[in-house]
Length: 342
Ligand code: NAD
Ligand code: UD1
Image (cartoon, rainbow, N blue to C red; front, side):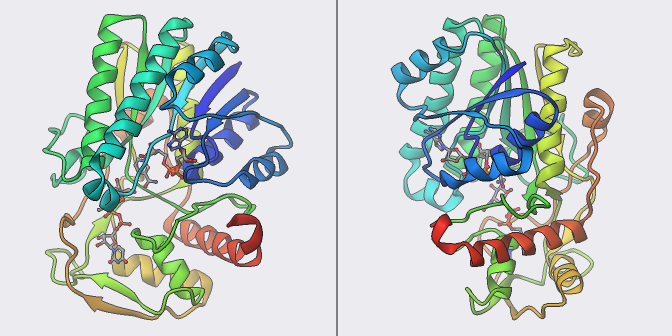
């Protein structure tokens, strides 16, 4: 019952490790702490009461990765989160993204093949759909990537498909919509480095006084209130889907060796709805202004989730209010623990 989690101290990885441990799995984590902090390991243990095996390892180091995996031949499945994820940075430094996200995935697949590990769950993104008519289902066409980061997700899906055809590999690729929120304990959550690009961390940091004002990027879109619409999914709901995906593979419920699932709520929320919900559940008045559109933003997207519900027996349980409540509790935890997190 051993699962290898790459990037397991990151935002989604840490929540998934907790859910795996709660479900009775033994977890092996590898991470290089490029975008996470060692204290996450203690906090995972505080929540689940269980210790994961941890190895500080960079998946770009092929030999070290192979050596490590060869000492854990009883791994049932790998959940592969480790990647770089800043869209803007990927435009400035594309080679870093191709090396880490694509090269790292190739190294991992080689290490798995050499050691007879046949099941992988991959972190993909709704970004592969570009601008499409929502609700967007898994059979929607893949659009030209808008950034090197987005391109790495598309390329990795292709690499996984080819390797699935050529070997015993079984793959589930999970296309996340917009993950937000934090664990109820407020001990783990998203750790944005520098100025956040994403909406929810920017909201919580503005409310906490770390940022002066939140700019709403455009209110002249063709939506009911003029602001963009996204599908915000609670990270704990998202984490639970990974356990379902692992079970789908190891219990051989799959009909195809390569499966793709959307992970979203199926409901779109506008930027102003998110702000209003934050103010309602926290009682904090947010300092925000309407600004220009952000280049590259699409008007609206939300997931069609029927496939995940039917085949994985999974759907979201938490609403936007819970997302905002837990994101705010996490922001306050960070404020109180600034020394241990930075
Ligand atoms: P994160 O940055 O919090 O977690 C990624 C973890 O991987 C970090 O702990 C980082 O230190 C580690 N890592 C990066 N490069 C590594 C390497 N070479 N070797 C070992 N460890 C390495 O990101 P996240 O939000 O938890 O995202 C997890 C995955 O989900 C990523 O693949 C990301 O692209 C994908 N994804 C995220 C979102 C999102 O909005 N958060 C949306 C869609 C897809
Ligand atoms: C971002 C990523 C995408 C990733 C997705 C899910 C970019 C360009 N895209 O998409 O690759 O798959 O997250 O995590 O980073 N907004 C504001 N003010 C802000 C910040 C955001 O109004 O300060 C608006 C944006 O215009 C957008 C919405 O909030 O309409 C959500 O933005 P964001 O959280 O950055 O997510 P996405 O753009 O959907």
